Image 1 (cartoon, rainbow, N blue to C red):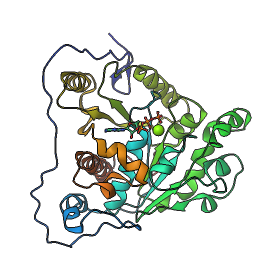
Image 2 (tube, rainbow, N blue to C red; image 1 turned 90 degrees about the vertical axis):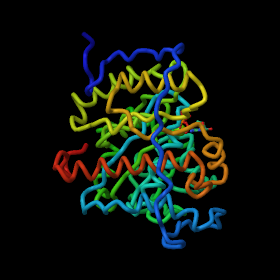
Image 3 (spheres, protein in one colour; image 1 turned 60 degrees about the vertical axis):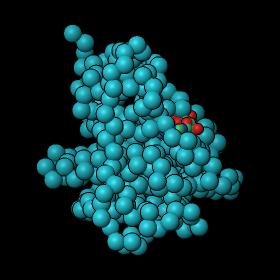
Image 4 (tube, protein in one colour; image 1 turned 30 degrees about the horizontal axis):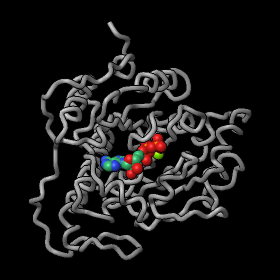
Length: 338
Ligand code: ATP
Ligand code: MG
């Protein structure tokens, strides 16, 4: 029998490629009756999304009850495999959560600074970043930036953060640096989303130690599970030592192309392997998602009608619903994380 890690076998199999079974996409229903102009997208820049068309999707988000006054749920978006949709997921999930009136903080933990750029910050060498608080101990309030999305704050990153991964090696409590920063401010937010770099380095370790849960995007492609068993191994070690409360928020299928047998097969295999740990929401391969970062906009402000916006809106719904369930049942107390 395979060893179990967080409820899944340690050695994840490589997805097969030769079967044509289909998989079911769960979509938002577009039949919600909403009066025109009832809801507004709040983006502090001109946007080409007509207000009335934004209503239907946002209404679905806004029907959720507000979460109570608990500490933020901290979700690390991690997979050491590159280009699987971590940043796209972190940015768009954070924006959808904020649009659903959940005050949210997005922390860019990657020296590539892709999340920082995708949310609309142009390069600015004088801007303070995560580096300044992690390494130079500058106060959070001097680092955090208001984004152009209402209720969404950002801790930016730039290339200097690459130095942090090295400088942390000799630091005292090096795995707990980010946790110490976030513990100070987590009562201010409902959600904190951490965008991790494509490596199991000290920055990713800091993110996983400070998180309540990890969200793992997996691209629906050949060798989809490459590296996942290594990630699960790391998660198990972190649970044993640094953060026993770490949960799996969910596995997210990204860049799904329903026209290809390969995508459908990878999705089917992942669902049969990971079961209910896979989100119902699926993120389709969608060119609008790839375009949005160059306009510095999350997808719901770039093209609300796109399949990509639909996918991330639905994901935010699932994340909020899971948080409500957790707080409702008391399965996770406000203090159980990190
Ligand atoms: P890295 O490991 O380098 O940090 P990542 O895992 O953060 O990468 P992203 O940067 O989110 O991955 O995505 C990689 C590329 O794929 C980007 O150009 C992004 O715009 C594009 N992309 C992400 N998701 C989708 C999607 N669902 N459909 C189309 N393109 C996508
Ligand atoms: Mg990235």
